[in-house]
Image (cartoon, rainbow, N blue to C red; front, side, top):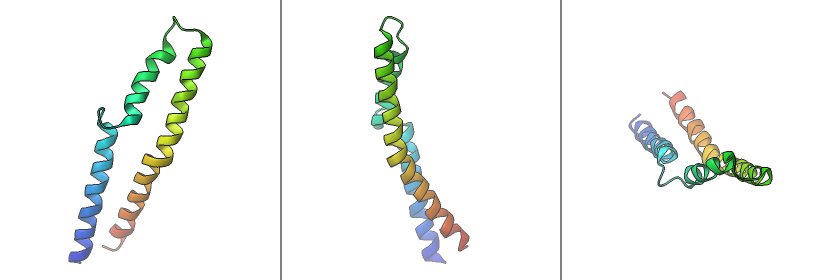
Length: 87
């Protein structure tokens, strides 16, 4: 039981780190790039082609983020759930 508790503690620390990174504006490259592109996408002084370009760049970022950071967190959450079931 002690080993299980220790493992869960390690997993919860990893989970916290991943969630904290998501909210860290300086460390999270996705958030920085989204913050840079979003105003450009909505800038009324730019032509429609540029709006589309920036929107596509944001969508590509989302796909990349979901494929890495979100998937990693989902896998970690599944691992935590499997360990919690053992309690």
